[in-house]
Length: 218
Ligand SMILES: [Zn+2]
Image (tube, rainbow, N blue to C red; front, side, top):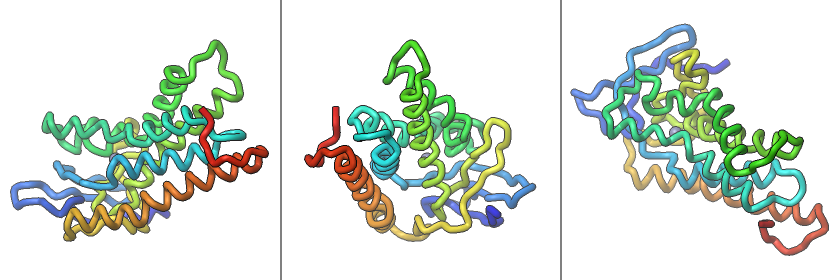
């Protein structure tokens, strides 16, 4: 179903003979993983997708706080870039697109973010819904990464499995193209549509609530 192809790639196309290529294994196989850097999707595009998710999935009028926290959650998985500075291999659980891009991290991250930014004594239906929204924003990051040809693959099931996946359809990324070309492509296919969809979500929710001003509630 996933259609994972056995393919040696370098996300940014900037590998050298001394820099190991990344092997995306087929289902049931595992390949050697080295270090490989990717440039996009950039944090702003991930944030825009998180914002769009929050704009459409909130109950009633979208609130500014949920939109902002969801946008931040959508960026959070790329905190693993710290590993680059520390020369962490992609084979490590703390490598790029590993544990922080997993479903388990999304679950834990959503709960923690809800507790921190939406404190309360009980897990009401409203807080549970917020946690679900933040979880979706976190998962959106990994899904967006899995849509890229330059992806080193995403460890959706870490820490239980280090198998890396990407979707059969990978519209993002020009492996041998310029960084500028990749950013333009990302803006056209991710950033602008996500901002538009989020804005439409806010307007739609306000209209359905009988409000007319296209403004996010505090
Ligand atoms: Zn990422």
